[in-house]
Amino acid sequence: MDFLIDSQTVTDLEIFEGRKARKSVFKFFDRAISYGGRRELLDIFSSPMSDIKKIRDRQELIVYINKENLSFPIDQHLLDFIESYLHIPDKPVRVSRVNAWHKYLKYKLQPTNEYYLIQRGIIYVIDFLQDLYSIVTEEPKRDLPCLLEQLYKFITDSILNTELQQIIGVNTKKKIGVMNRERFDYIFRFCEFKRLKDILQILYQLDAFQAVAATAIELGLVFPELSDSKEVEINGLYHPFVEDAVSNDVRLSERRNMFFVTGANMSGKSTFLKAFGVAVYLAHLGFPVAAASMRTGVFNGLFSTINITDNLCTGYSHFYSEVHRVKNVAEEINRTGNLIVIFDELFRGTNVKDAYDASLAIISAFAKVTGSVFLVSTHIMEVADQLRHIENIRFGYFHSAIDGKKPVYSYRLHEGVTEERLGMLIIENERIIEIIETGTSKTV
Image (cartoon, rainbow, N blue to C red; front, side, top):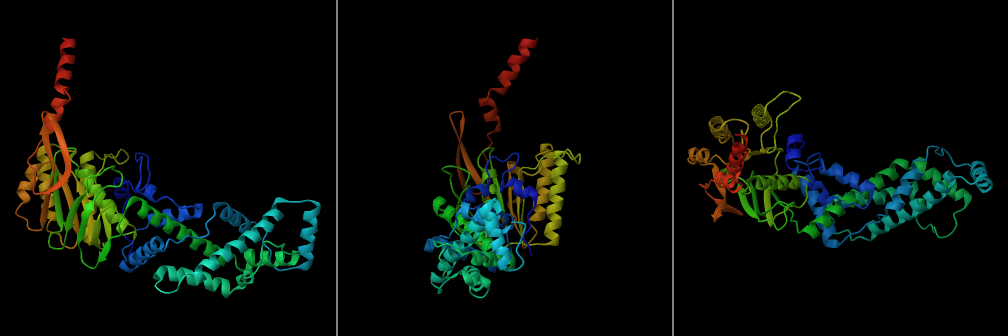
């Protein structure tokens, strides 16, 4: 089963750059050397997995690249040239002495870019394959990650057991004769074209994984430990976008599968929920996360409701968009199960009384659901008071204080429910009432 995630969640977590997102999680890992490597990384990044073995295999490969400091023959100019050469439209369909000499003599009399591309392309392909073959055959065969072993085996078999074996021992520093050039061109662009493309694709994959490995080292990211349980335990969680971020711990289990977060406005609730969502997303890619440690089960999907807006195309108000979103998530839970669900400040689009009633009803209903994990935040403290008796809910709050007349935020998560309310203090500090009254007196 594919890992389920929708566009709302991808936008909420700023996985990719968008119209409103100035940063993206993808950008942190976007360090591939080749264009093909970047395309492969983008494809990998768009496809989180729910298969624990596949996730572990990818983790092990990236960790191995780090540990062994592996490097691959990735030269953007060379790879671009090879790609251009392989896709020359007029493919040879046989080796012909007459054709070979005819093309050669014609080139001598009237040089063409296409013939030059073929000449250089053949040399570049041979050099590329020889370098790659040297790496995969010199690498110790013991303790290779399963995924890397499979990729290496495909490369080795492709070179040893096909027409590509003819590149072994060729010295490209010496001139390649007319007939040998014709023969190699026939092998590369006709006989083994698809196999060569597959080898290039493997190199692009390795380039992408090398980019992830480099990011893990530079940013000090850690690889999650995967378990068969339905738990998520993260120590030292922080959001990679935030400089000098304050880290926090969070734990959810099958017995206590809902985490309810309260706190004043701007205290850090939304950033915490996004950090959690990003960590879950990266864990299901087999990628490292921004935390001191993470242990997690493998889930079927991730759905968030953080930055939902009204929908002008459908005519939905903000409140109705929220209601529609909650309904869709509920249906997905019933259909699939084993999901991670994040709700930030539910029902902001209606009055306080309705928001209180709706939040309490919806959260109470979700609290009865087993097999999925929920993170919910609100600044309506009264909702938390009514939920304290539910055993599977864990409560946390972000501490804030008043220094003189200024709010001070620690961005530190504590156990329990906050009683702090700073909204009116912030309004007073911004002198909004005074500004309005001053404007009113001028119009009288």
